[in-house]
Length: 392
Ligand SMILES: *[C@@H]1O[C@H](CO)[C@@H](O)[C@H](O)[C@H]1NC(C)=O
Ligand SMILES: *[C@@H]1O[C@H](CO)[C@@H](O)[C@H](O)[C@H]1NC(C)=O
Ligand SMILES: *[C@@H]1O[C@H](CO)[C@@H](O)[C@H](O)[C@H]1NC(C)=O
Ligand SMILES: *[C@@H]1O[C@H](CO)[C@@H](O)[C@H](O)[C@H]1NC(C)=O
Ligand SMILES: *[C@@H]1O[C@H](CO)[C@@H](O)[C@H](O)[C@H]1NC(C)=O
Ligand SMILES: *[C@@H]1O[C@H](CO)[C@@H](O)[C@H](O)[C@H]1NC(C)=O
Ligand SMILES: *[C@@H]1O[C@H](CO)[C@@H](O)[C@H](O)[C@H]1NC(C)=O
Ligand SMILES: *[C@@H]1O[C@H](CO)[C@@H](O)[C@H](O)[C@H]1NC(C)=O
Ligand SMILES: *[C@@H]1O[C@H](CO)[C@@H](O)[C@H](O)[C@H]1NC(C)=O
Image 1 (cartoon, helix red, strand yellow):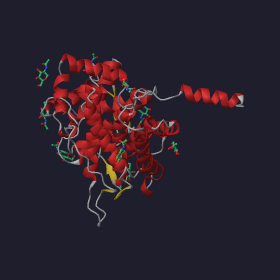
Image 2 (tube, helix red, strand yellow):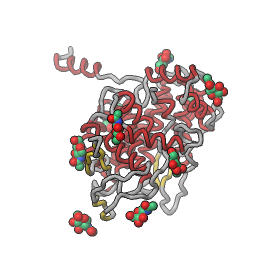
Image 3 (spheres, rainbow, N blue to C red):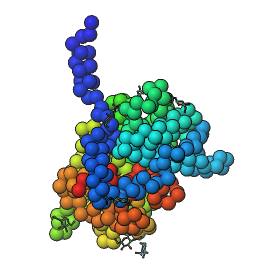
Image 4 (tube, rainbow, N blue to C red):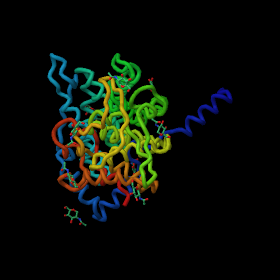
């Protein structure tokens, strides 16, 4: 007979059950998205057309699973991780296309990608870069799986195989990286390394209903000791003259703008996934993510921002880095939608960088994997935010 304590514990566990689908997108989101698509209104229609013309969103898509994935040349094995990032993008785009159209052929193609990887992959290797692969493609695969979670054509056995792959290959490495940082001290790896591994644990925790995994990743993000954790990520706050707005210098500002902006793509993923489970990391530390996005947005659309010397593990970074300033990458639609449209906060610089990216994208809207070149950087964010996040 259960004791009172264990009964209460069970009740608390049940109350804390996860919302599904509830990583990057919820059922309510798909109601809004589908309405925009049905209406044919802009800018959603253009983004939907972009998605449906993507080579990664076709039901004929065939995956290329690898037993051992190599990211980073270790002197012996050629890199083959492009197969993983392409297939992760395809699994996600096809799952989204199924959710919007309800056409099973897209779900089947997406399921086939996950099933074939789950049946094949045993390890991610290469150099230290393997920990970028575990984080980036972990959160991407888990998001595809989460969307397909209730697809009747996905057998429970094979869902379990995907859960096992995500746990055994990806989450194991995500946890290892956050604990050990590949044997380096906490300041060695720049923030994006932590952020993608945190994003992956949150997504896998949601897909596999693992509250311990989810909670640990959220706690690490809020109070952890390394560069991706919010307290360490924040280098300096400045009050913007005139607006009184806080602009926050992030950890990679003195490195280059490609990574500075990537951090905010990943911060958006971390916060959106948690938000859909009732944990508001967007609001944490007085909207720290917004304040940082305002700083990086303002600088990347061509305005000067203040800067404080940062002592990186590579030496002192005395000025903000203008390397790849104005870089084009997806991710800021999510941040603008949440802070500006949903919460009604002033996100003008975040919006400006979102618009900058869209203006400089061939389609005029935020695309995803395949729309930003063939290299890995074009696949770091899942994208299509103009369709998936924009409210109005
Ligand atoms: C799956 O979830 C969607 C909402 O995202 C819902 O419309 C649909 O009915 C569900 N399908 C099944 C088989 O439960
Ligand atoms: C949506 O875009 C498609 C493809 O460009 C176009 O054919 C269609 O007319 C657009 N829908 C509306 C309502 O404008
Ligand atoms: C499960 O996945 C395996 C490996 O891809 C596949 O061969 C098999 O057909 C799948 N089973 C079902 C029921 O879909
Ligand atoms: C849940 O996550 C924790 C922390 O990552 C892990 O130790 C545990 O094995 C996971 N549980 C299952 C059932 O996979
Ligand atoms: C910036 O402000 C936030 C919110 O008050 C705070 O949590 C963070 O520690 C500040 N950063 C620095 C470097 O003081
Ligand atoms: C880096 O900057 C700190 C703070 O200004 C200073 O103490 C340190 O000597 C500098 N290190 C180098 C290598 O210049
Ligand atoms: C970029 O920064 C470097 C180093 O501070 C500086 O010498 C250079 O003039 C800057 N370039 C532009 C285009 O601002
Ligand atoms: C939002 O902030 C910008 C500066 O960051 C300012 O120019 C603008 O007036 C503000 N908008 C509102 C509605 O307060
Ligand atoms: C991006 O778009 C802006 C206008 O919105 C333009 O001024 C800028 O030159 C473009 N940048 C690139 C890299 O194409």
